[in-house]
Amino acid sequence: MMPTRRAALAVFAMVAVAFALPALAADNAPQPFTEAAFDAAQKAGKPILIDTFATWCDICARQKPIIDKLLSEAEFKNLVTFRVDFDTQKDVMRKFNARLQSTLIAFRGDKEVARSVGETQPEWIEDVMSKATEKSPAS
Image (cartoon, rainbow, N blue to C red; front, side, top):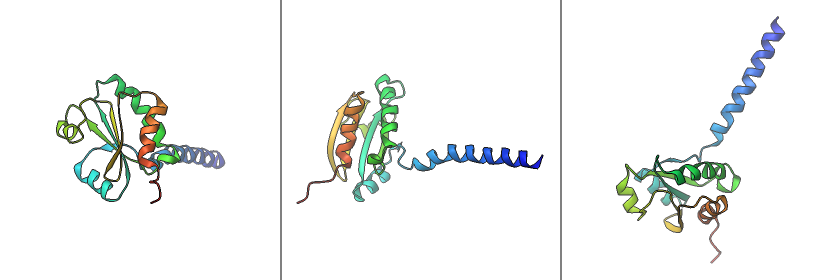
């Protein structure tokens, strides 16, 4: 009887670890925009994606799984993604001159390097994100 219990516990532990690993690996998961976090990421020279969204926006709903999938790829492991709520963060929308939800803005450090509005094609979204993560040409 003991080997069965031990086997069951081992299976349970493996399943728990399998579910926990993706959560631990998702340290670049999108986070709500705060001025302090954005400033810190810029000062550190991090690649940044601003994702403006609204809960009622169909385009935003189509963008989210594409962005989430791309963030799991090695190329974007260092990309810091901030989500800006179109309805509740109007001051932030103005700061970025983003007039519409579903606007994606890429920064490399403190420099805006790409912007798109309403894109739902994975390759176009990837292109915006890549602009933030690509290396600057050598001087």
